[in-house]
Image (tube, rainbow over all chains, first blue to last red; front, side, top):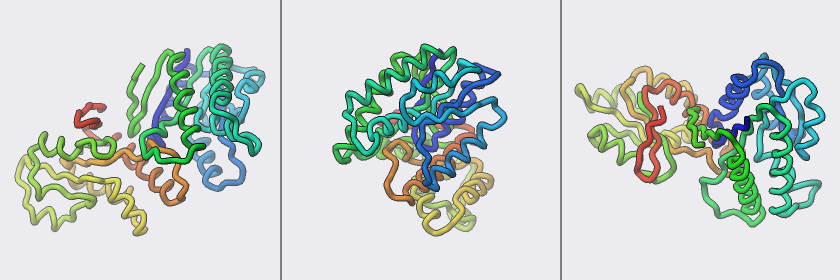
Length: 175
Length: 133
């Protein structure tokens, strides 16, 4: 089963995503983390908070900022995973090694990786971001990133069994 | 407490005014009324106190070095019948400015907490309310 969880920043979507995968799978499961942490203090703090939130819930973390299908051979104990989040994955694929990869190639790579992962998993919960509802007066690169993420989200939603939007911590099933 | 959220200019305040028949002097924009201010308007049974643009108040209190999380929790405790209105501000590109990121994060968490404790949550889109809790 594939579940997409969509929401804005600080909307409570991570919490809901964890609850969802935990209700689908009581035992071992993987947390596939796509954020490149580096030495950015805000990121380090964010990761710390998320790790604290999900400790004692049976997660093992796989760091996978690029090339999602490389996570599959690392999943020896369980076919259940929480992928967080697609917006970072799209950014990491698009802005790779100081180069900018085109929108089409980015979408193809991310969607392909997610499909392979979804085929492998018994249960896959995917978290993605709503970044689409503010001013759109952005530069071309940002707009191209937004378009790529929009297309990826739509493609994932199409292939998901259930889709939820989370707003102020409240989940609403939209598919 | 009831919470009403939605994007900018979606008709949240208009909706609340109509639904609860709110008197103008009972609407506090971008501010939490003090005990004195509430005594001054002297609410009667059934009068609804409205705090609108809570997100702007949060921004102001963060800038002033306040503790919006505790202040709003304490306000809600003292005014359990209040209606609180806020924009949803977390649905855009991650802002470049660090203060904007902090503001967005803290506002999102405050709204999650308020929603968890609210007796009702409504989301207004194009003037249309959806009861989500």
